[in-house]
Image (cartoon, rainbow, N blue to C red; front, side):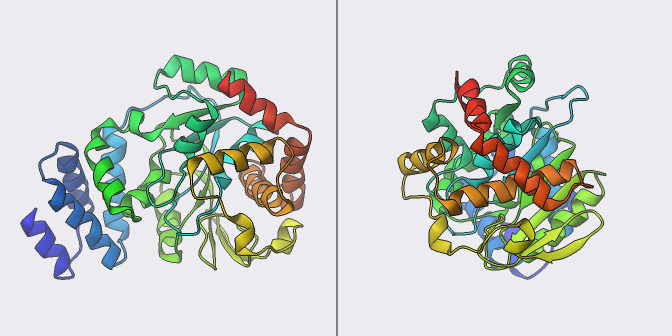
Length: 328
């Protein structure tokens, strides 16, 4: 690892194969915690390259517990995290609106590292039990419309880095990898990224997968549709700048999206939204993200109609019904 660190600190890059092999060695715990922490922090000092991110992803997908969806067409909606905005669990909440609108969701997520509540934290607080039994998860998907893939259960080889990431408490390249390594590799995905360079890398990597995807970055720093200003939106063939008005929704302040300081507070916000007690900002932001995800599945539909679908899922109580079925 000393040679690798010197290589990186001198400004040199890794090839795709080198990046893959290093992550495979990390999974085998061939390096001590201090060396792994130093390796992670090297990528806080400079942008990661396409070859490096692709190589890390190759390793993660090789090591993960894969789940064959058996031709089921599903969507994942997920952000990288690490944007430092302390928002409530927007993507996870939006996933229930999508499922309530009748689309199958295979949500991938984990505990919060750089935020107080990740998707796994809030779902566990709500009473959901994580599973890695393929048959049970597929049954849940068929009967409820959504199921959740708790990353530590499907990427067990990466357990060695969990305490290191937690100790650092900062975004690392693992934030960039999370959305790319869903063990089901669903047909449709909506990604949020914490900066513009990662947005471009996602487009380049996903184009080679022949996936239907949209990737977003809010120009004021959010890894999701925040409705606080302009948002860059990239699909396999297009690139555009959208405003809140393009979603048929008003613009909000950053303070409107605060997610609380604890998992308990995040849980209360989550339930309030699905139970019809969310603020206008919370409801609209969740609907905007769910609507954009629905448009990934239905590219010929207008964005405003897709947002309306998501809103109807929330306001009718169907999204709440999905949560109740999932937990029970």
